[in-house]
Image (tube, rainbow, N blue to C red; front, side, top):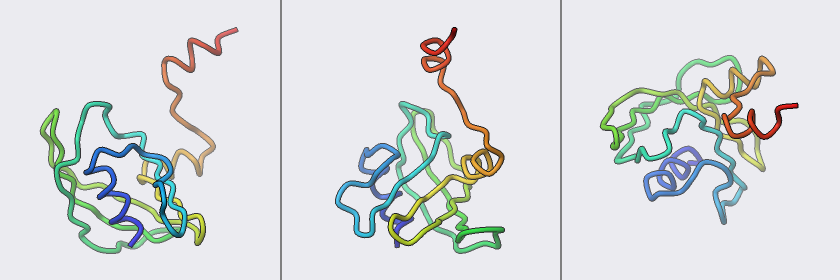
Length: 109
């Protein structure tokens, strides 16, 4: 399953974005990840009702800082597959996005 592959990649220290050598190609969008925070373990709780794509509830165990939380991921597409953390998907659907402070500073006119 693509979501499991994406979460295993994160657990192994991989960043969000393209999952290298994935077939079909997988892209992950998760702006809620904190830079130094690591994924220790995860449990896919199952598919949940969603308005689009396939939506899954996931329990995440994180470190640095230590945290246990539930998140939802939405899987969209065929090839490529896009995996969005629910919050990112909602921003996309509303034509909004997070801009890093670096981006804001570099693009001030």
